[in-house]
Length: 235
Image (cartoon, rainbow, N blue to C red):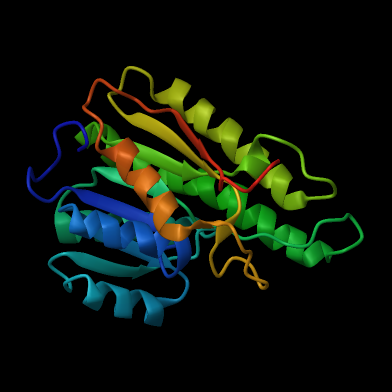
């Protein structure tokens, strides 16, 4: 549980990129563990369906948010505070990838990827810090194995290197505030992130368990990084 949560029985976890994949799996596991959840993404219809599945507005709140829009990020946090009165953990999880190779993708797609994966994550950090500081809560960010080693021609890998650096920069910035910071760094995951679903990969539920492991540590333990690969993955 986070440091002194707002509600001992049901602390509050905000998740961006919550409409599918790792975000949705984390929301389900968090609700099962007694968290209230705020589900944020651009796809409000899918979010509302998931929120209903997880118990409705008393337990799960759907908030439309384009993470590249600062006004949306501020509204997301304010909606959290208006509905649940505090924020105990935030998971900056929104992101997407693209083809490897500097000639294999469009500059327009690069721009959207960089804005979502890097700028969007940074805005989530900025938007949630005041509430997390008030609750002495927990900030988590989705990086990747691709943020620890370089993938040939991969702008996605470059964005995740930035997120890995962002997590450490946030940890240092928040030192002394009581806020814990964790980077989640999955290898190949079988999620809708991929058009061609990989075999012998992690499942989104596996990554969600890693998130919950970090969240469930006692207040004096800050798990800074969790790097997990499928057993079959070499690199």
